[in-house]
Length: 211
Image (cartoon, rainbow, N blue to C red; front, side, top):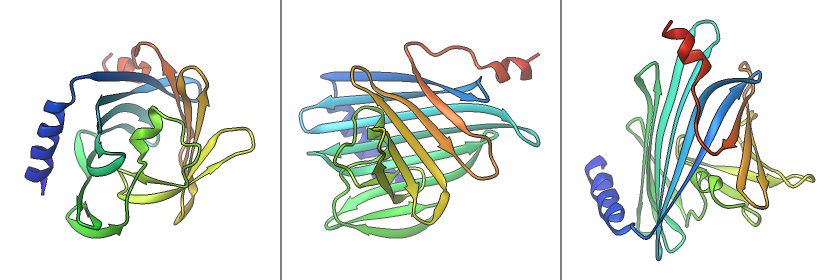
């Protein structure tokens, strides 16, 4: 499965040379910078490839380093494959691979396989680059499942896990610069906010850990 995903990604990466877009976000908790997210979009004709990476350093009961790498590949506006790896303190926490075959997707989450039928036209990676005005469902590469997307009265978008009501991401867009910020709310954890910046800066908690 991974070999097939890698081969497909290499083929698509080779073809994608026309346009590259990069967006940088700083990650904040309690107004303190704790990490960064980088989103890259490669586009060439009917092919689109999205690469998202993050690094977050926080102290809850103890110091933790959470990072992830996501890749999503689209052709003619339809997801054809994706991969996501989540790390906790440098160790793999979750691995999710997705491959479209015929009329369905095979989703492999930590070795466990499930299926999703129908076309997936929108995934979390796309949210960094385009406003989802008419979108009702968004596929999460890191969870391997579809989530409900609702437009709020103030023009923002709320992405909710139908099985976990306490897990909510709120996306705010600006008319001239695309995705402006993301508010991530989880029970038992402090809120985290991603804010668009032109250039990534230093992470405050990493500096303290290296002292």
